[in-house]
Image 1 (cartoon, rainbow, N blue to C red):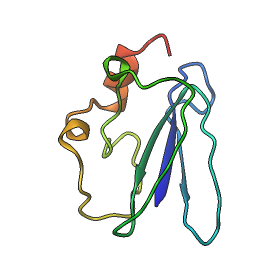
Image 2: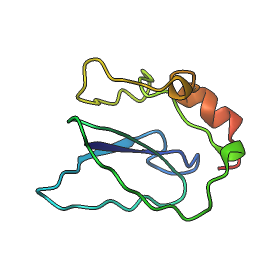
Image 3: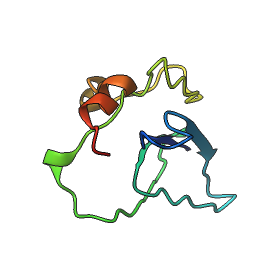
Image 4: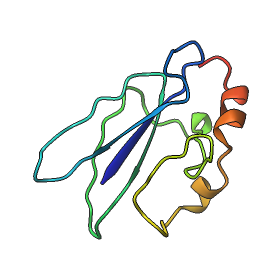
Length: 104
């Protein structure tokens, strides 16, 4: 799978930059993502199993995100025709997301 992290901290020198890493069963790598970063991922193979831990209990009313194919972020997901949930298809662009979440 490809794991993607975007810096959404407005005062950060890496604000709006992203980092990608391929995670797989062979390399046995893990990734820790601190507060202030958006996170997304894509499976590169069928039957991929992906587990992650979070620091807070799930709260659907606080859920948000950024559209995966935002041209300003220009993330290479390495998938030509991704299967994207309806929920994720309607997420805002990075610029709109950060304007709506000024207290990140």
